Image 1 (cartoon, rainbow, N blue to C red):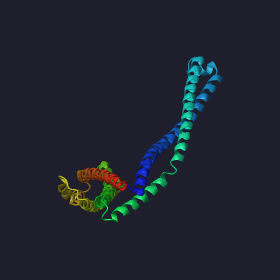
Image 2 (spheres, one colour; image 1 turned 180 degrees about the vertical axis):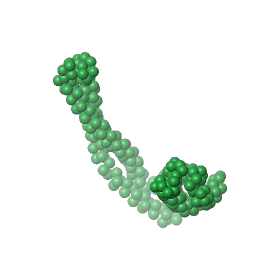
Image 3 (cartoon, rainbow, N blue to C red; image 1 turned 135 degrees about the vertical axis):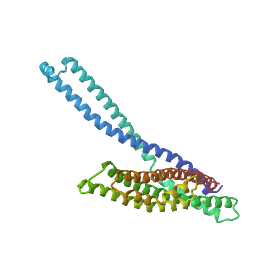
Image 4 (cartoon, one colour; image 1 turned 90 degrees about the vertical axis):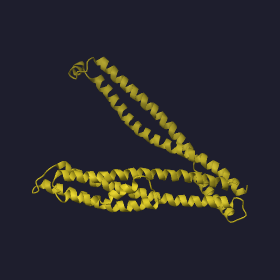
Length: 309
């Protein structure tokens, strides 16, 4: 084991502990911010309860009668209890905030050198990797070279998957927009073409079709992205084949007699059918992305183990 690999081993352990602490630190800060908001609300509530008690103490029995509050003493006791409970809760929360703030400051100081250690670790890994790969006689040379190649391949695959997910999300947004516009026209029912409502309905249909046009074009791009990552599973080709002509189906349903309510309904059903398929595909692609992430983590662990030798 070289001096570099020994330092790498030490830093990996230290960084792992620090990163775990950092996660706790971030969670603690989120909880602290939420408690601050809750405390502000409680302070206002306590003030109001105190005002209620003060107002009730000043109120005459006659005033209570008109307000249908019953016995002044009973009502006053009730208001005092509510005030005391609220004040106690606020006081306890303020104490929690004080302790949380102390812990946040303390942990924050310990995490100051995390980025320094991460940078040092990254640099040392590069140095150790270069040492091994530059020496063909090094016993770890072949193993590290193979793992590095696998990591590079997985990174490239991850990029392709993310591109497919991005295009798929854009496609879903277009479907949502198109469906909202077409359904708006569908819900209006029959209309008088000469009236203003007819114009609004026609406008919704036109805009909905424009979005469907864009979705049709985006769908072709989505299919290319899926082909790039080689995702093939039962029904995908058939489903996408049915998608190819969905714009023609829409126009058959709408443009031939687009004032008929049933035709709009059919067009909506066509878009929804493709929309549902794309959402299922997106879930599967996201599953592939998770598999790649797990595989990359495993490969990086293997690489780190080699660099520590």
